[in-house]
Amino acid sequence: MVSEPHVESLALREQFNSAEQQKDASSLGMWVFLITEVMFFGGAFAAYTVYRSIYPGVFGAASRTLNTTIGALNTAVLLCSSFTMVLAVRAGQLGRRKQIMAFLVLTLILGMVFLGVKGYEWNEKYVEHHIPGPSFQMEGPGLQDHAQLFFSLYFAMTGLHAMHMLVGAGLLSWLLYQTWRGKFSAAYYTPIDMVGLYWHFVDIIWIFLFPLLYLIDRHGH
Image (cartoon, rainbow, N blue to C red):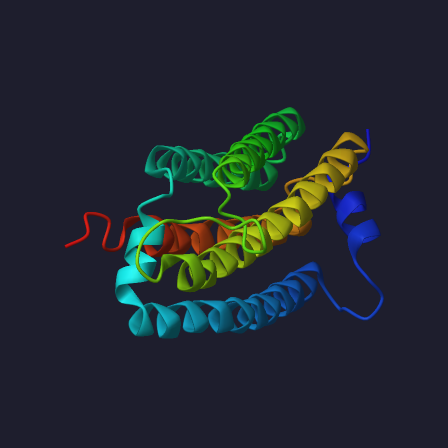
C-alpha cells in the first residue's frame, strides 16, 4: 500500500514548491475556466432574453408546449448528483477510496439519467414537429415562424448543456479509473475537487435554464 506522503510527492509537479501551491494554482485555473464558460453561456442567455422581449406572446406559447414534469424531474436528478459529488469530494478529503468510488459512480449514474430523460424530451419535440426546419409545425397566429426562434434557442441551450454533461461524465469516468489505481488520498484529492467545481457549475446552469425555458409565462394571458 502506497503511503499518503508518497502519493502526494508523486502528484507534485516540478514547477510547484508544495502541494498547497499546486492546489491553489489548480483552483485558480478552474475558476478562470468557469468564468469563460459563464461568458459563453451568457451570450445564449442574452440572445434568449432579447428575443423573448421582442416576441413575448410567441415565446410564452412555445414555452407552454414544454413538459414541466420532465424538466422538474431532471432538476431533481441534477440536484441529487451535486449532493453525491459533494460526498465524493468529502470522501477524498478523508482518503476513503471505496466511498470516493461509490459516490462517483452514483454521480455518473445520475448524470446519465439526466441525459436519458433529456433525450426522451427531445424525442417528444421531434414527434410533435417542434424541431426548427421545413417540417416545423405549430398552429396559432405568428407561431409557425417566430416560434422557431424559441425552439432554436431551446435546442441550442439544452444541447450545449448536454455536451457539458457528457464532458463531465468523461471526467467522472477518469476519476473513477484514477481512484481505482490508488492515485488519490487525504493528502492529494485535488482532481476530485476540481471536477466537483465543474460539475456544480453545469448543475447551476440548468438551475437557470429550467425556469427560463419552462416556467416563465407558463399560464399565458
